[in-house]
Image (cartoon, rainbow, N blue to C red):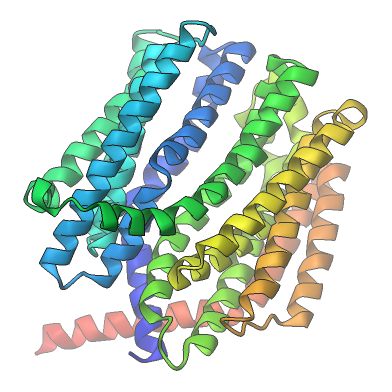
Length: 478
């Protein structure tokens, strides 16, 4: 397949996934003022901490077998027997691991008080089930089904949040109930759309196959733990050394960087598939370098845009109780640049099935994050959490970038990197200066700079759009 065809396939998959996620994810972000208005600061901090732990526990319980499902199913898309064998073994292993782990957590809760334990256990299980169903849909090449499933999950979460927080005010329990129902709806949809019943059979369960999948997936666990180390450990350390209300403030500041990562993960989902499909091609170095550089520039400018826009809209989105969150946003947004870069490199490691390298770099970044956080939390306060996050992702990006060169030769444009450093410095300075005129100048600067830096990418998009219009016109004429 030519580079142009590969690029179009990547763009097509990204668009399909984007349609399924962008509406619900960004609507959820802009519903933040609603959530903050119906929950106390301490309640929001508790909910945020609890859901973060769910995010940690789900992939740890499954030993990341859902990632193995995606990667191994990509290789057997035209082999129904192989597909059935992988899906059967994945479900058998995950159901066993889930039952044992959740039972242990329930027993522990008899001795340690865990708020909303029953709802949390159900939520963890439904998160696991929907996660494996979505990854199976990706693995078999049903990106449309994956997109619709994500849309159903996101849309249902929003609707039931409104129901259980506003119409029937249940407090934190309403969040958990909304997520449980939403994950259930997503799972049922994927299960029937992909006809998973026909791919599950006891005769296909093999101990050797399960061990093969585990050898790939277990090194991925530290990669999922890093999100907990960098997110949940920040919250945990803040709660211990400061208090749960301040954790709520930090959670609000993270919402802005989370919105960027949501947009990026749409692309990275299809990028991971493209890397897995095309990594054996002769032109892999040029294709990966071009795509990596282009998308890193684009998403870096998106981060610049957030820093430029926040001063103008912050007071409209956030209540006075959370006003201190303003100070921590730039460091968290800049950390997204390195997070996105390391995630794109991680996708290449996934394609290569080099999961041990992912594990090593993730553990290193996690250790650095916790160390900086603990050393500086007393003197720097919440700034320690945001700065430790930035340093951790910077180190993660550096190690993965130089490590990947053994497998794929990726080159960065030095001049472009220098321009980005200067742009982030100017934008961040004007952000903290925070005058109305300065904020307007900042936004104009970001728009002009981003347009100039991505001029070739914009031309490509316009050319493809024009090509599609001409194609449709020719079809009508014929």
